[in-house]
Image (tube, rainbow, N blue to C red):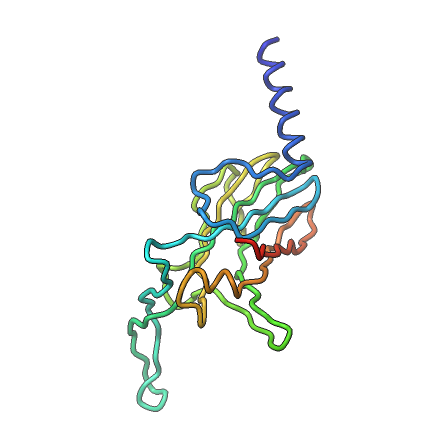
Length: 199
């Protein structure tokens, strides 16, 4: 009877957290919070940013450069502004199956009223490939990144080419939003996450 009461208490707690979109604790979340969003009663997403001790974004990234009129390519390391984002995803209340995160390329929208600009993932260096660094879910199938049962969470790491942002602070000023694709009940939908201007 005591175990049943504890289980019911936990269920009630998760329900209240889901209703208020309360972020679950995860030690792998990054220290700088950028934004959050949810599909009410189904999934929640919290985006955070890993900072560096010196506040700078410059990283040495492997790239390919075409030489000799396009007949050959050489590999070289180039200094590129890079930021790491951590995406905390939770199935907050969908019990008819898993919330699935398909493999996808993440993009940060840095557009202004005058110009449209997208900051893309770093895709030339395997060290910076997006990956799931923590999950409570079951084994993904095919091109899925993760699949999450009721109240399960996952943390996804992705590295963004932060063009013209030589510091983390500058990136925070320019980054406006991003989105993640989720598959729920056989339907894939985009969950946009606006970034807060009060960081």
